[in-house]
Length: 84
Image 1: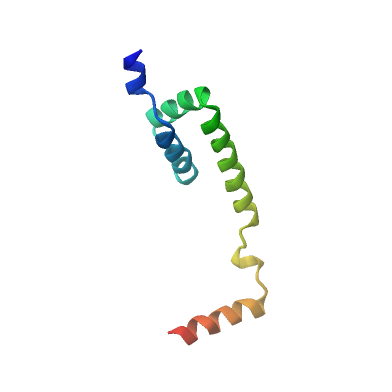
Image 2: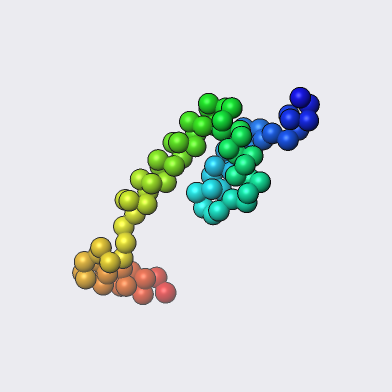
């Protein structure tokens, strides 16, 4: 049992991996350790679900340059040039 405790992630490590997973791909060991922790910890599992939901919402709401009008693009260029 003590061996399992030393191998298992704590909640701080698990939430770090959940956050890291949103930015880049985790290694096999990280994915396995995280899956094991999430299967046993309802709080981190909830955090992971909320984090994924927030990430999806941000990706959908993020404005793109192509969505700007020509006047907005010109205004942005003017502001940048004034600051130089």
